[in-house]
Image 1: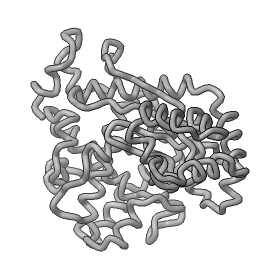
Image 2: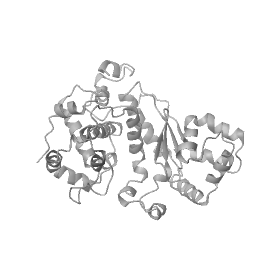
Image 3: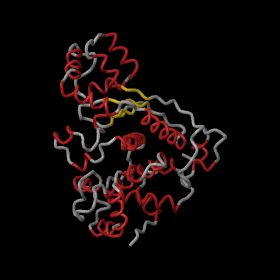
Image 4: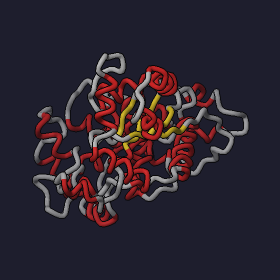
Length: 337
């Protein structure tokens, strides 16, 4: 997207600098979006005692494709058109464990006003940089610990039962790993959701399906999220603790040397590559002090260098650039020693 196209739908109150990446602090007070935030899990409770066609129809009309996605993919009970749907949804809603989780969610998220405000602000920033893009409706749900997020073409769903806090008893009972539980807190909802939405809007279509391509793609997501949530701490946006970020900064040169010496950048071995991209207690082959997702962080540093050395590149242009090798070459990335 050209600078002209990226800016053409913005009000004249914005200056041309709105579409550059020189400042993360931009004024979005005049950005207009169709923002909708709904509590699907509360509406779904209306089916608990009466799964009438009328009530199902109300939910179908309100939530559209998301309603079917929830039934078929998230809780996997099949379509609402099935003859046994009433039995299936009643079984889910009246399950004792689900009722306990629902009560816990209702207590932890008794009010979602602040969460709604955070989403609205992030989506206004999204609209600011991507004026032609559709703004998703936000719908919360309970998945039975199956999904933290669910994305359709127009809805960004948030599984609140996956954000009940690192001390939530059920997580420990299910033996979820501590490194995962650490980020299952409400502070991470908007960051996770916006990253998930971006990932579906801008898929990684680099022709070279290698580690470098995935590192750069993930780095682009992190870099762009930084502009959607400029006041959030890096530890929240990046999902690295302050201690982990300190280790990464101090170890930057040795991490890069490791990737180069091991000839990893152009590896197409999926089982090898995911060790540097996926969450983990630490990165295999590196010191125990290392966090997981080291490759994501390096990708972010490369993308940051690329944008710093190419000031005319806009955020939309960054997300549309599919050539990871070009980004690496033009970043002139040189890690600190």
